[in-house]
Image (cartoon, rainbow over all chains, first blue to last red):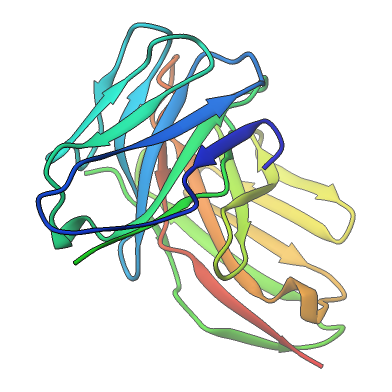
Length: 112
Length: 113
């Protein structure tokens, strides 16, 4: 996971609470992604950012917001958490080659 | 809908054998193909990528691509218990500068000592 960090590693929320997942990269690359991974569902793209100041919806954006304030950081916000958002969340960054992605260590989120 | 399909497994092989993992994709415009390894409780880790038809070797790993048949495979030679993991196939969506990947659900591999 060299170059991509995520905080926190674990989080438990009650339904309706809000929180922000943080992702930072020191790879100096433009494209960043937020995925969630659930058993049997694989990796699903929530939002991505092709460059600083731009964001686009992925496959499952409902219930989430994102912010790309600078090249290094891409945050994911849950405004009102729901049990269906219990998942493992990964941030990824596109590498210097042709579209490979490098992942952060993940955040394991439980919503009760 | 663009799809990447993998056999979920589990694929069980004895130590020292060759493990063969397969992936098919639906988007004929795809140009870049990736294999990731994911240990339980960890994040996906890139192990191989391939862009051209044919074979690409890296140590004990060989990626094979056949664009006409729309499949990509990963061979692991001399399999070790430490290779036991889920292997994810990913395909770049379409041609051009779109940087999204389409992901398979993964194949679970168990290497038995």
